[in-house]
Length: 95
Image (cartoon, rainbow, N blue to C red; front, top):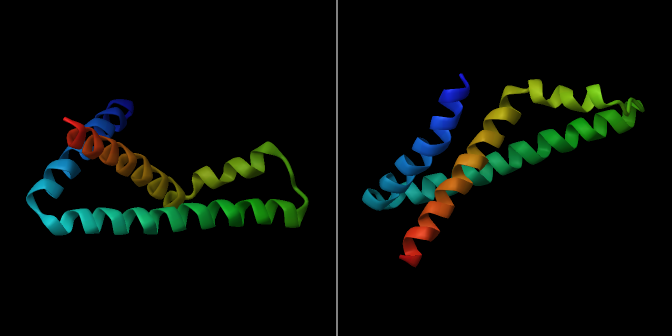
């Protein structure tokens, strides 16, 4: 599983870069997904912190419960992949 995650961090941004070179709408889709992911990621984090403050349960184990939310993990992973894709895109513009 660890190998798949590491390979995904290398391969998926390169696929995104090649796709946006060939299809002009791909960049728009990738940007839209990043905005949606940022909203989901931020809202889930904010709601988790709010719940902890509201319930007065400021323990480290409670805040780590957010990592069990698959939407939080998926949004965070896409933001990582999107950031790597953007770095590759910017790097290609400098060459």
